[in-house]
View (tube, rainbow, N blue to C red):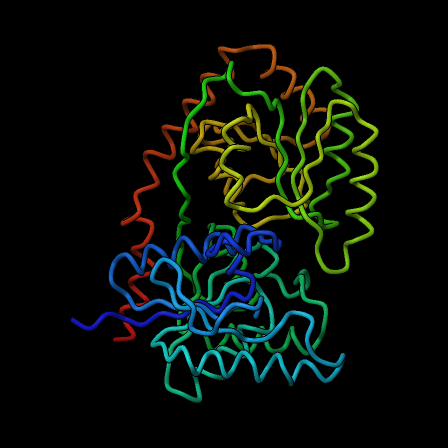
Amino acid sequence: MKKTRICFLGLDNLPVLAPQFGQHGVGGEQVQHTLLARALARRGHPTSMVVYDYGQADHASWDRIVTYRAYRQQAGIPLLRFIHPRFTGIWSALRRADADVYYVSCAGMHLGLAALFCKAHGRRVVFRVAHDTDCDPSALLIQYWRDRKLYEYGLRCANAILVQSRRQQQAMLANYGLQSTLAGMLVDAPQQLRPRRARDIDVLWVNNLRTFKRPELFLALAARLPALRFHMIGGTQPGEQALFNRVRDDAAGLPNLTFHGAVPYQQMDDKYCRARLFVNTSASEGFPNSFLQAWIRGTPVVSFFDPDELIRREGLGAAVRSLDDMATILVRHADDEALWSQASQRCRDYMKRTQNEDTVLAPYLKFFEEAC
């Protein structure tokens, strides 16, 4: 039986796929693209990616995944660069990939471009929601009206829409009138599991430094709890350099806080393995990849955001409403080894129960294989 050819349109994916480019910033969705692409390639699907031009050769391959260059991230003249090199570069790379199915995630104009390409060439496009705001036209994290319209066009043309949570599923139906399918997420297995006494990071925070991630709340926690060892990891994002500089400078004044800045994905295993607790301070999320990375290592998550109330329902840490609550939970887990150990075991048990690769892949394969 012919295997479906699948192309991932993820311009930022290369730093996760190829360690030599790991110095470039990434987020959780680039990790998910890469893990999914590797799993499909292992199953014999011809798999490719359309990525930024970082100076790599076109058609370069890693882990049996062929990459096609679209354009250099800063190339082109403002106002004109949407057409060239962005539109033309992506279109050309999609054509060279010659896939049966094109996979896109994260709200943005790229979904519209992929939909236009697929309509013109008789191919299929699958979209995966990456953030709750992807399902709400009033909250989209898209700057330009043009790009919003392209995204909405792509949504309505998509052959399938996949979501991370029931909340997203309900919002997609309520706001856009579109049906969607729940699809899980993959996670790399840890190289080691450390007992509590061997973990020297009391509280870990990992995120790109963006305003809605509220990194200042983590700084406030560190200032409030000087007896705990806090570590903060995150790089800057376009338009957020001032925030990054402010957080970095404020962190320097806290002796119990280590600010790492951006850390390549390939070096993150050690950081997660050393952490006793993982904290998320975001005002909104999708389903954070970092939650899975923490839980599979037995690290409870303390967060304001709780996707489908999973943390509360499964006892995978604590979902809190205020900074006071968060500080109380952190101290309680720091002081009570038995409490932490029970939560840690629940995290590992949950991941063993749900992280079967074949089960996670099933909804993706259903739509991918319909193309053949």
